[in-house]
Length: 272
Length: 288
Image 1: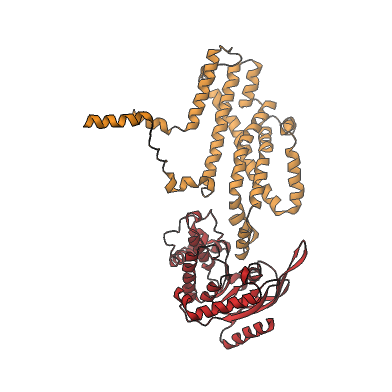
Image 2: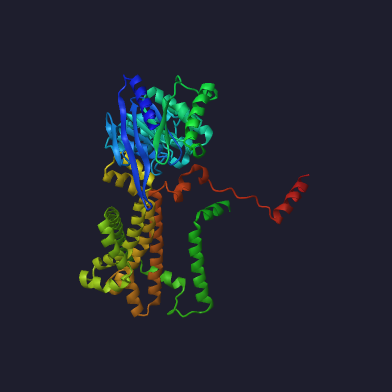
């Protein structure tokens, strides 16, 4: 099963031969040492993500999808296998965390400029760009507010602006909308999609929401748990821009049902 | 009448409490005819200060100078030591352990040693102030520096910042509330240290005033110095609070000051006591 999943992914890669791979994941595994002995968080995962592609990692909690994302970001070392980032490598990525991690001692604008500060560039030169980014996410006029004065959705929007400020080649998102209410989540999905359409950045998006994965992605990678491994890669063939209404369409329903059945097959659906 | 009321309402309640305490002191002394050599009245003490303003000013400034010097040294070295302890397992096991052990020695007992080492000048008083106050800073700063959340560590690492960037941009600002808490304790302790130093050996300062006045049974002088010390300690504490509000306006404990919504004074609930209830209909009657 694993083998067919990978080969189907490769066929897909072959179909888009014009695009260079941005991320190559080759037989990556992760074993944690716990008090009860070693625990395999991730079996052996191989996946190529093309330049400008939006890929979702879908799976139950604790299946290792976050671990995989963290290894891509260099926050954790794989126990086996290799990850290769093309282009600027680790310097060229933006990370959006599950919690926004905005710093209370900085204003919203200063928070967005944090990566610039960290990379020893002049924040002044990026102020204009930061304001523009905030404006595209509807945060115009909030530049000088403090994080605690904003709602959860606005905070996560600011966190996305922070990830984008230094023009990353690769955008990594770890269940960024998981803590938001359903309506805000929908809004942010639409905003993220239109932003992605404009910039065409390579994006890897971790989620446990089937509809979110189908709505946003070019490809949905289903990961099972214990140990985490890729069980299927589903290509989402929907024209863009996609509106929220497509979720009512039969085709969307077919994708959702298929993903649900894949998760069910591995007895994971009840935990999704 | 309205003017007086508005002026009076602007005086902070802390001042009213102090005035009330002084009145109580004066009342007890007057009613029970306490002998002046035991406890002089407030009037006597205030007159003593008013009669020798230059003397008390000079002595106060002396003690204040040593206290502030000790405080600044404590903050600088305390935070520095805390950073070293947080970044080095070795220092944590040695230096931190030594500091804890040293803190459990009654530090006042070391005061005579400082006189032998540093002489009877300012240095021994400042050293005493540092010794007593630095521990509060180190302990709170270590706690604050360690309390960087895993999320913030991830954020810093994903931005590929150097250790120095992590320290300056994340760890230190995140530790500021903790450091400020230590600072508020330390500023009072620095004053204690300076006074202890002056008790042991000195030719000036309020501690010296107390000790020499005691030798001459000038209780009024002792009380004058104590009163000035109380004022000084209070002012120093509020100075530390002021610093805190300036440095961490973003912290939960200070947010209401910068929040325009809650900045307004709470509206007083309508008075619905019996007197107003009864007066209301009477006004209505007179109008009709």
